[in-house]
Structures are given as structure tokens and as C-alpha cells.
Image (cartoon, rainbow, N blue to C red; front, side, top):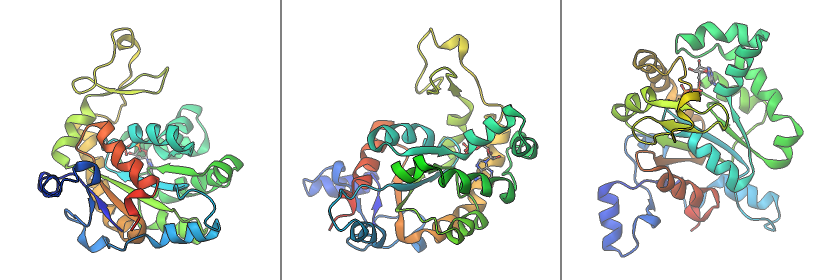
Length: 269
Ligand code: ADP
């Protein structure tokens, strides 16, 4: 699968070719070489096209987005959702709702979430499997955010014959992530995420902003180390359909890369 990045080196190269960063689609890899490949088109898209008899657009309908805490998954999911109408399923949001509602799942998850740790696989797997089987996911496609996060979770999806068309891996170095996490704030009314420094909220939103209890430097470190512990397994499980996106750029630039990948142009021959 092709990689999508906008590193300075790559940009320079492409500028020299008069193509520009907008076409920065190539087999550039920055650390996960074992999980990449460079066919003209992914087998997943070829399968999807074949199953549709070639009559429908080649936009991905079953998408997983992976990335560290504060890598921008939530922001990009909002943009992807409005472009493709996929059902956005964030396991973090699902679990937070369960905690708030005091359900059995919520009670089982709370202590892990409070500590920044992953909740046990058995707590989350059924929740996701059941949600993906709902008619809206079947009809509109889905965008799975924060799942699978472990080899066991990926294996559970595979066992249930749930396979993504595409896995987007939003890559951001750890050095940027802690700062992003600590300054992150949520507007509970709109669901919009702001950052105190990089994306400050308007003054009327400020009084109602909330700060996630696990968005502290200390808990972010725990979440980051858990993320790194499991990342290799996730990339290995989906290596043939994974596209790496450089998540260090502004959200519109990141989305422009994602958008091209989603619509298939980035992986066309
Ligand atoms: P993050 O930005 O840390 O990825 P999320 O909102 O996605 O935040 O998740 C918040 C918390 O919910 C995680 O720290 C973890 O405790 C729990 N969680 C979410 N998804 C999973 C999952 N797939 N497996 C285990 N725990 C999960």
C-alpha cells in the first residue's frame, strides 16, 4: 500500500518534479517499513470494486483510523464523516458514554480509563461487534476510531469477518503529542475539539469548555506507551490496506491527504 506523507525531503523532490505536495503520494516510509508495500492499487480496493461490479465510486466505506492520543483522529473523523457520510464510532466516546450512564460496561471500564490504561479486550470487543452490525453501519459504512487497539481486538474483528477497506495511520511524533493532549479542550455542546494555544476557542465557548480527566501529561504518557506497545500488531494485521498519513501538518492539509486516499485517487495506478 502506498504511503502518504509530506516530509520536507519528499516535498522538495516533488516540487522538483513540478508536482507539488498535493501529489505527495509515494512509497515513503518513516519507520514502519516492514508494514508497507507499494502495489499500484490495494487488493482491498480491487476487491471492493469487483464486488460492486465496477459500477460504484471507489470510495472506502469501511475505514479504521489509528493514531496515538491527540494525533488528530477525532478532528479528522469529523471531516471524513461529513465527506463520506460514514458512521463514526469512537470507542473512547462509547466507553465514556457507558461510564456516564453507569452501565455494566461503564463500570468495568472506568478504573482503566481513569488510569489512562486500555480497558480489557473482552469489555470492548462485544460492544464494537454489536455496534457494527447495526443497520446504519451496514447501510452507510463505518469509520472506526480507536479500535482495534490490540492484536486480540484485531483478531476478533477478523474472526467476525469484519474487514476494513482501508486503515489510516495518523503518524505524529511523541514530542508533539503531550503538548497537544494537555492543551486539548472540548465544547460539550457541539462536540468540537479546541486547543488552548493552537486552535483557541471563541470567547463564548470558553466558559463551557471541558478538559478530559485523562488529558494530563502523566496519563498521556501511560496512554502513549500503551499505544506504542500495540501499534506494531495493528499495522501487521492490516499491512495490505494501511496508509500512513503525516499528522504533524495543519488539519486541512492532513484532511486533503486523507481525502485523496479515501476517494481512491491516491492509490490509483
Ligand atoms: P485516546 O486519545 O487516548 O486514544 P480515546 O478517547 O480513544 O482516547 O480513549 C480513551 C480511553 O478509552 C483509553 O485510554 C482506553 O482506556 C479506552 N479505550 C478506548 N478504546 C479502547 C480500545 N479499543 N481498547 C481498550 N481500551 C480502549
